[in-house]
Each structure stands twice: as C-alpha cells, then as structure tokens.
Amino acid sequence: PAKGHAWLYAASMAHADPASQPRFSDRLVASIEAARDSLRRKDPNDAAHRCRVALKRARALARLARTAAPDAARAFNAQARAVMASLSGARDTAAMADAARLVAAGARPTAKAALGRVAQRLEQDATQSAPQALMAVDAQIARLLIRAKAFPPVSDEELVEGAAALRRRAERAFARAYGRTGAERRHAWRKRHKDVQVAAKMLGAAWAGVVRPASAAALNQILGAERDLLLLEERLAHDPALAGSARAAAKARHTVRLARRVLGAHADRIGARVYR
Image (cartoon, rainbow, N blue to C red; front, side):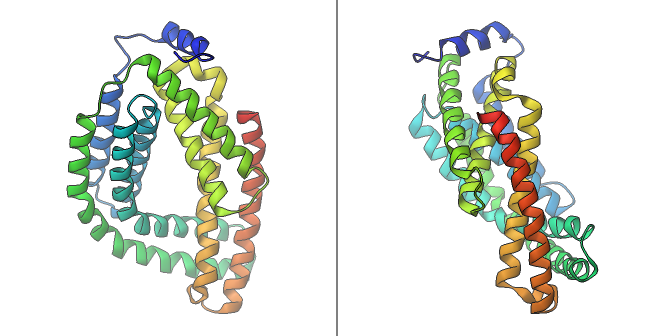
C-alpha cells in the first residue's frame, strides 16, 4: 500500500473474510445488472430512479479503482455518464415534483397552492418523458455491462489506496462547499461523499471509524434533498407559469429557498462531523 495508508490496509484485511467478500469486478457487474433489471419495473419514474442509483454506485466503484486502472475507470465512467444523462431529465423532473409536495405540506396557503400546482405539472411531465428515456438506454446499458465484465483486476491494496484518494477528494469538496449555497459546489460535494460511501461498503468494517456510517447515510439523504430543492428553485425562476402566475411562483420560490437553506445548514453540521 502507498505510504500513509498501511494502517488502513491492515485494518481492512483484518476485518475482511475473503470467502464472503465479493470481488471488485463482481460488485461492478452487479451494479450494472441492477441498473438493467430496474428498467423492467412497472412505474417508469421509479425505474428511472433505481437505474440512476445503480449507475451512480457503479461509477463510484470505477472511481475507487482509478488509481489501479485509470484508463479503464475513465472510459467506464464516461460511458456510464452518458447513460445517466439520458435519464436525468425524467428523473430530475420527478424528484422536483416530490420536493414540491414535501415543501408544500408545511407552507403557507398561497405557497402551498402554488407548489401543489407545480408538483402536478411536473409529475405529468415526468410520466410522459420517463418511458421514452428508459427505451433509449436499454442498449446503452447492455454495452456498459460488457465493459464492466472486461474491467481489469483490482487488488485489495489498490482498493485501499483508491479509497484514501476518494476520502481526500471528499474532504476538499466539503471544504469548498461548506457555508456556500452555489449549486456547483454543493453538487460536487454530494458526488464525492457518495464515492466515500461506496468505498466504505466495499472495504467493510475497517472504515466504520473513519466514515461514521450512520452520519454518512444521513448526510447523503440531506444533500440529495437539498439538490432537488435547488433544481426546483431554478425551475421556478425559469418557468414561473408552472405555479400559475409570477406572484405565485415568487411565493413558491421563497418557500423552497428557505427549506433549502435549512437543509444546507444541517448538511454542513453533519459534514463537519464526518470530514473534520
């Protein structure tokens, strides 16, 4: 292992049971198979969501192996990113609809009515676009599965080194996002945090004291909800007609912004425990 990471390698090997630990390639293939299987679900919006979750996990695994197989990891991530982009429109729309309904539940009457209209419109849009998006990615995922099966072997030592690199990237992303509200920095932190979660699951008990699984899982949920609210706020700014009128859209945006700031502050507090 690289200098400075020997302790992590020793700990991970001490906790690992080789007979029960799936190989890296098996996990990568399983993630793509889960993405493929999700396409068969009856609810198109749920299918798009589950497919993207599985693809995110696969991309995080590829980044975990980037120090060992940089070319293969970059090629895999680029191909997986293209598949996710095909699904992003439908999935983001459905997520914004859910976020609008959630915020509406505790909003004042004007904002509540506006957000209800927004949620209804967005749900209709997502329902119409999701089936087409799922059809478009079927062949792409089949090709991605072939690439996953051909991924070069990655040793335990290399995985530990990759995990340490992901942890450092997440720490830098947190430092740039802490106390900020910009979409780019917050989203970058969310992605890097997800990478660390995947690394922790791959390495097992050795990372329990490093990543704090309970806090990390809560942080992932909060950062995701914050992201959905930010997308919703931007959508209302560009398409106020969703809320019925400019005035209603302004009320809805204000309510969404307040909710997003509360979530952001909560995420920062948890992030300080996880990454400091």
